Image 1 (cartoon, rainbow, N blue to C red):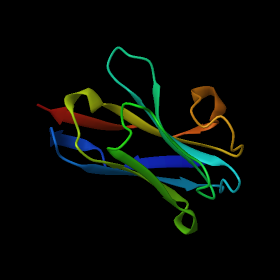
Image 2 (cartoon, helix red, strand yellow; image 1 turned 30 degrees about the horizontal axis):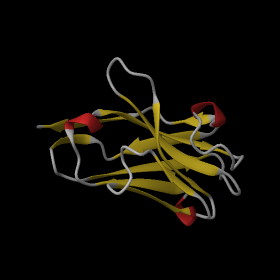
Image 3 (cartoon, rainbow, N blue to C red; image 1 turned 90 degrees about the vertical axis):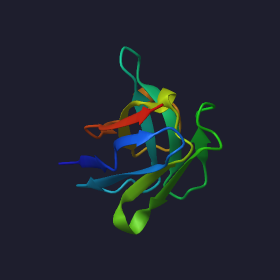
Length: 124
């Protein structure tokens, strides 16, 4: 059974940083992709960042470009989202996702495996 577990969420103030982690168990995603999405209250789930297994391709949403960094440690089957200069607009539940196919990094529908989500709250 494949399982993705996020950690690292919390309550911070504007301007602070957080690092989210996502560890997969049950399979690896060699040649695939790993990503982060978020869903604010009353909003649809949106793409945040994604990376391919070999780090050959990385994508960011415009809203986080320059502030967030995605990375992965294949040996640990874990990927990360370093979030800097957080603003209240970043408040959301953050979900990690993964899929064996490396294309369509920004598409929610292109990911078959999802974590349970971790809350990130940024106060002003």
